View: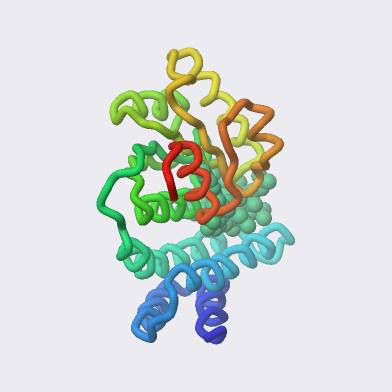
Length: 215
Ligand code: B1M
């Protein structure tokens, strides 16, 4: 089974969306767990792409096609994750990537996992200012706002979001969950957020705790 994970990772490293789609389809047909395809296959590949980019071996085009391959695989695998969706809504969540930040893959994966576990997710997309999170939270009467940031420069926007909620008089009503590769638990506490999650699975656990609902 590890062979299919390695092939999925390689499709992302090579920037081959069609291979990623074909392999993800094959994996599902073989009954391989879709979440493991993501965590042990596609994610391993995109992390390697990130390392190659950081070391100067890959440039922006390779980063872009690697992400395209990952998204191709996710498009096949994510609907399979939603197969176990519960019927009752646990809580309303507004989810987005902060202003100045275009990274969407991790945020979308968090949204899929939350949806699969019964949360109603309003995904407001990437590059969203604090005001857009606040407006969406008012619109859907959100219990939780989830803000993703992948850049050390944009994680500062998560603090702006906490401030904007306070200014809007919503801070006591809405819990703030933060995540993304450069974000840490220490940073989350420093900016006054309600919690940090390292990955999509722990984001679901955290959301249950923040919503004060049984998992
Ligand atoms: Co960008 N990029 N990127 N990039 N990119 C990183 C983040 C970087 C670490 C790569 C590197 O140098 N090694 C680096 C940031 C350095 C830093 O700030 N410290 C970087 C850079 C520099 C840049 C640009 C500036 C490059 C340039 O233009 N010169 C540029 C910035 C654009 C912008 O945002 N303004 C840029 C652009 C891009 C692409 C657009 C090409 C592409 C994104 C495509 C897309 O999303 N549609 C991209 C990609 C793919 C990456 C890497 C390789 C992979 C990110 C990813 O999708 N990971 C990334 C390197 C890396 O992270 N190792 C990198 C897979 C995903 C499943 O994981 O997003 O971490 P992740 O999400 C996880 C957890 O973090 C967590 O759960 C998710 C699932 O487990 N999580 C949450 C995420 N959000 C959460 C929210 C939560 C809870 C948990 O609660 C709300």
